[in-house]
Amino acid sequence: MLVAAFLLIAAAVMAAMLLWSLSVYALPLWIGALTAMATWQAGNDLVLCAIAGLAAATATLILGHWLLAMTSSPLLRAFVALGFALPAAVAGYHAAHGLAVHVLTPQWVRTVVSLLCAVLIGGSAWTRCLAPPRRV
Image (cartoon, rainbow, N blue to C red; front, top):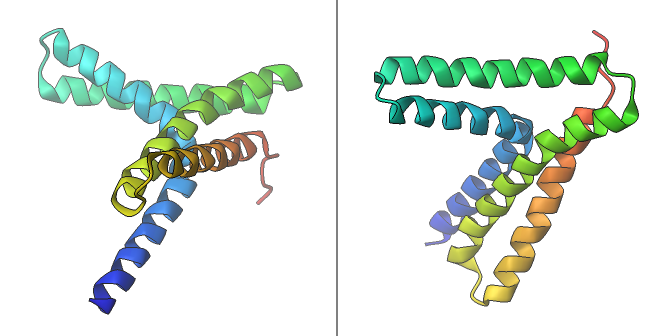
């Protein structure tokens, strides 16, 4: 029983680290999934849906990074970073809520923990988007 508890904690920490590091990619993932679903609803083949979703996600990521790199206006950079941070915050909220449902009993505690995680994940994505590029 003790080993299972430690494995559960380790899995939760690894999932949180994965969410933290991949939070910037929530917007391209959402755009790609939305495009793939729209292509599927139009009656196209599964392979075409996957290609369309991948192309839309890639284009979103490239356009976002290009706008962040080429724009000198802090206001426009903040809006682009906000576009990447909001879906990351929503993903953080739902991931924390999914874990909190199994661990925490009172609903208000679950909501507070989920909102705190949403703020942390969204803030992390915001910071990563607005950080100056690293020189190699």
